[in-house]
Image 1 (spheres, rainbow over the protein chains, first blue to last red):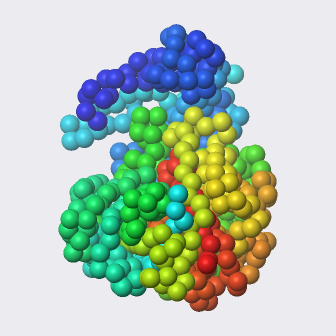
Image 2: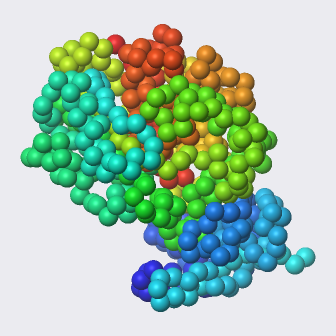
Image 3: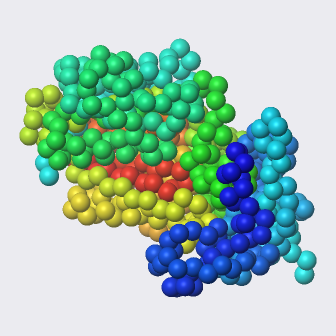
Length: 131
Length: 382
């Protein structure tokens, strides 16, 4: 991934920066220009809390080349308390235990290594919530 | 708008066709369609292809393919909508003929997937790169999440999914052009290796080379080319959110439902009128979601349809009589056209051992990505 493309996504991927629609209150993650609910264009910055709940999930056994060393791994659609949904790997647990309703915490992790230069790419992953 | 008909079709066999290149495949299907109608010229060509750019490093397919069949100079356009590229190419041709702009248009689809590209990575480009692929999800992984959500919401089981593969392979065994012309037992499917839980290898459509082409003209001119034209009663396209996380309910394919509603309205028919259908079973769960979204099965009982025989040959509404993507194969850009050809043959009474007796009204639904594009055509034998 060329560095400008990676750099653009840093606020969302490193800090969970999101946007709340001034029209209808929907939280968009990552931020976008037009609200998917009301088509509003006015936004205020907000940050997602570093936690969520699994909506649906899978365990990837046959992985893309860059992720082959990690397979099998769980990937889930998560919903944060702000109502935003996002996709993330769920790690630090037996992947077969990940399923709908599971409470997770989001953490900052290395996600992948790219290209011949082995550039490291970071972002968020989910881990089981400590109750 | 003018009424539009399909008057001829051509299709390669589907499979790992190492001896044929991208252009060979296209030319074989396109020339067969032109020969069937005994024409040596068309007004324009649409080439549906998901990603020759990534699969074989070739873009700009319009002029390449026109030239390959000796039609240099003709208007020719590449159409891309991921796995729905073929269906959208058909729709583009339909619109051009319906508008009165052209009288003879070739709609084709082609994909060459076995020339050594990293197929998993190429297909993943039909998902949202920043929100999904970045996190290591694959295409089977996305449909696996749809399956999990469906299981959670509607009680669908792994066996229900497996029955879709068993049924479609039973149909495909009757199709000489199918990649897998053999039947499967339930235990073969349930014992195959896991790709993305709960989807196993035999829940997934294969990697396939192939091409398909149909020729469209105004209905009033159709008898010039064939005794048995098939009228296109409706063409409808709808989109949904690219990212699964952005959809209201991951167990429901909104775009499929919307494209179906638009097509039924345009044709002035209801789901109960459809006698044969091809739907986009890229994974077994997709067939279940699609027949529910299209109203071919009640909203919560799509999971029973393959096992009960509702959607099998001889059932009330046979679905994927060609074998579907699952058994016939899924050369992504060609799939939408191949589906239309199966319905074309069914409505002309040419489907041989797969023939649905007396079928007059048929539907083809082609989907892109994890359901973000869906195109539905309704056809009538005339």
